[in-house]
Length: 98
Image (cartoon, rainbow, N blue to C red; front, side):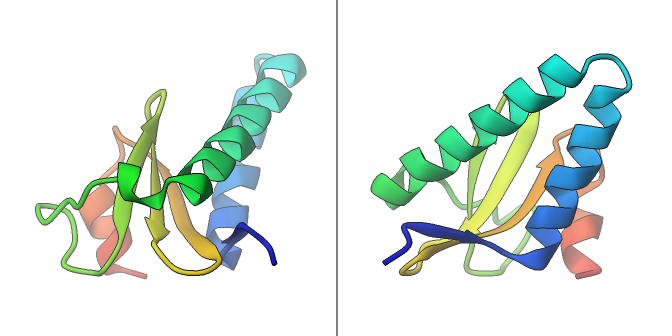
């Protein structure tokens, strides 16, 4: 059984992040993707490490931070990564308009 899966929107988020970072460096963009996948694996192994953010959403999701990004996921089997959003964006609005 898979330990985690990425929602379509999370995959699109990763693509957008890679494209943005790759304008400066393909190597840095690739390295950041590797860090995301390592974080997804870590979260899947210990899903309780995240925290709720009632200030951002009432949905049943948890948040984990990697650099300046919020990894938003559901504690399910397999763990489901819903979004990856830069913390400087309007996270609340992005989650409401989903």
